[in-house]
Image (cartoon, rainbow, N blue to C red; front, top):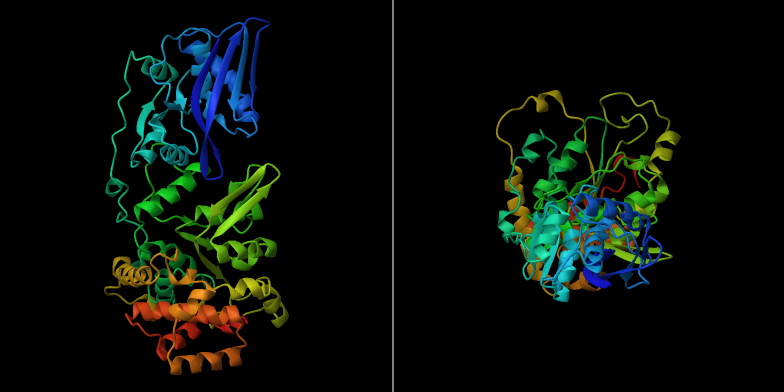
Length: 510
């Protein structure tokens, strides 16, 4: 007897329909799965067999063939356990009329018959809505992450027996109540606040500019000067995520498996801080299954690289293209996957191996050759892509002991949100959301300089030997400073400050 059950698979960030065909016929006992299954799918035979028996049903002691169509697309992961089990029960005649033949079934089965959470529930649901599927049955732990979607009935199930009772019409699983994005996690919950940082006004100003324009930032200073503390407070300065950004971010983390079971849409911008021993596939993405890397997991948020020169040079250079394009394409023999990578890069470093070159706190014991060798670990092309560079000096004792009110993240975020609103109005319909994303063709219109500003920028290009990319990035930063200043025109003071944060020669970097 032949039975068909609908399911869904994943490729990259998109889902695709999979028809699970179960055929039970006479012959020597066999349980085979075809249709390009990976190891996790092939191992589902043991899980499905035990789940069926422990749920009170019988496993056919005959010839069972499962086909996952389309057969030319590789099937990955345990997401097909549930439809395979239901298909076997239908094909073996243990179930009567199937009341929901149009429902999608996805889920991993434990050997007890309980449903376990899967990766990629949100992208599967988004693709199912686009394809017009009316309903989905999935593990209860995955239901909160798709509760905001319209046009899809979601039935969160706890076990195989519960799913069988539902599709047979004997018991109806309560449909997941739809929630609004405003009911997601409170973005104003206590967290890192810029008010915790004492002093460092120049660095705080650089963080504000970076947040307002989506610019990359490099902080250099001695150990203990507050570089990491500042970087961890950058997400609190960024505008609150829109529902569209939240869906996109949650979709990525759903595929990567970094969402906690039962967690809904992500309302806070991600902050990723990989260790400097991270490999190129870990940072950019790759591996046998073309998984997303840290630059993608930081999409719509911040990628923080502490101890910047300690990262292998090929790993840092691998970030150049994603930072430029806002996306990364991973090509493997079995296909290609494109992941978004629109993240703010924030890096920090010491000025030399001992950390105290030019600090005025302790004597530096590094030779000039050691200092140059240490700083040259960052390639020129990579350094050229960092929009702002700022020195974070050691805090004087009297400055650390100062008390009194300090500006909070909410106050800075209000100014940042105003600048971002001006940019969104300026770039409406262009696909650009902030000044850092301006293309060369848009630069002339978006970043017009007055005569005096043009003159000072030309002098700086000649004096510091700025590349064309460096010149363009100064103009983008100046445009952001003008937006914070609520100025329609980019003036001399905006360009002068942008050149200051460009930091040519700061800490010895050239």
